[in-house]
Length: 254
Ligand code: MG
Ligand code: MG
Image 1 (cartoon, rainbow, N blue to C red):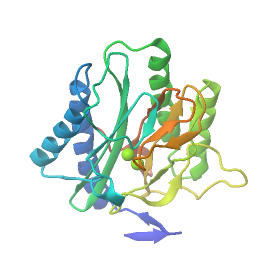
Image 2: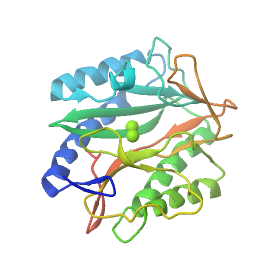
Image 3: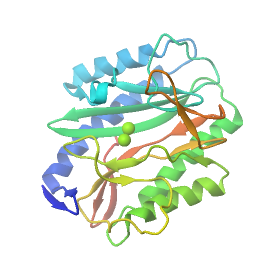
């Protein structure tokens, strides 16, 4: 793999391998979408993801990563990211963010979606919609000729115009043979710079985290779970995206 400014540039074969890794993630998320429902403990989502990893013969990417204990991050309501699946029962009206990663053929896949459990409030529905749309606004900018912070600005401008809080504590990232590669991909404009020029062969995990209230987060005593400081709802959408001469290609699709 070539490296420019510390950023790995993937060739077509490598992007193809990453497409496979990310497709597995997407298939697992598709399946989890059907499992999320009121009345089940969130650990059932973990068990389902683990069993699909065994079936696909892929390795869960997060389990053991810096000590994270599970295959999925399961973050409910005011939990933003990095929540633990547990015996906690999912209630009707909850929103459930699931972040999933796998390793296949030495490459990482990484994607996240927020799901509704039963009937949710209109504002929760809107939060999920705007978060997903802000991700796509960012993805549109992931093309050669643009700079990294074009992605960041597009996400922030859209989310802010819709009245959402944009979490700054966590950012997206390059991805490839490691889960987190350079560059960091902020969901907000960084003052005084444009970010690196985007080039064909870069692969980025773009992942806006939005809230209905404050964008400040606290970390719980488990040292992982990030919650909104004001208790407001949070949503998280993420795709792994390859930058190509034809524009952005989302790899984390089924
Ligand atoms: Mg992720
Ligand atoms: Mg990620």
